[in-house]
Image (cartoon, rainbow, N blue to C red; front, side, top):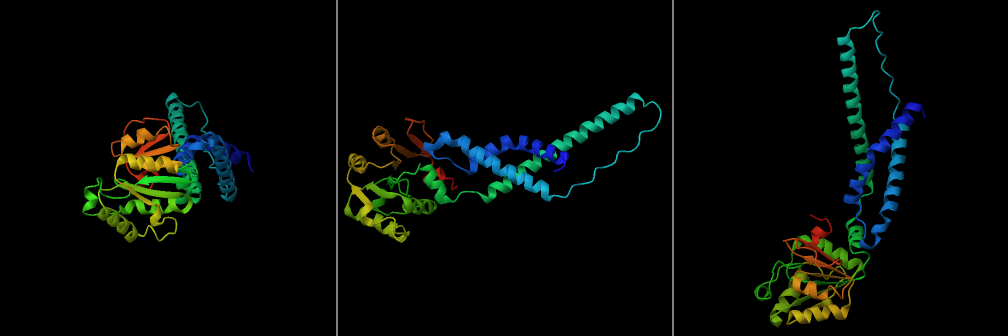
Length: 274
């Protein structure tokens, strides 16, 4: 490789550092238990992008250098010297911008080919947790109170894809507080019509019902999940001492009450589906 190509490669590698960090944080979510491995991820990604740079430079035909016009004999005027200096500054600035743009383009192309699937994102976000409990109201269902599901139960369509991915590798239990048997029937029928039981990862026996919020909290403690997902802040607070991780579904983005409690406006937003 020519010396000019080597220098160009070094400059490009220096420029994409900050941009690469941003792309990694957006496209390669790291599991909560493996945050300490971020340097290793960055090193691997940096090596891969450096290889892409080298390949692109070797593949691109070298461009002939433009010959500079011969300088006129005689002593140049001060105005001519200033004009030449300004021109050099403009050329240098344009060259720097083009190099930045080229570095960003190559990094974008690289990350497009390694963008994780939804299944990979779900596993990483849940820190490879194997058991998950989740309430229905306000998370899986459109309705937000037991009184509402006495009339009807409606599954939120945006959450279905994430829910099915969770059932592929997690032991998932859904639960809710209801006021009567008819509410239970409406909820089960809504889940069945949405196709939640057809994936093979969730069965009706893992949809649990109780008559009080205390009973639902007791269900969670008995099951001892890695993650519990709920929209009731009191339940979240009560369980924070007993459950490894909790996800509080709330449109208001409440303050974090404990290191193991995370919040998000919706379940699908937590996994980057919106």
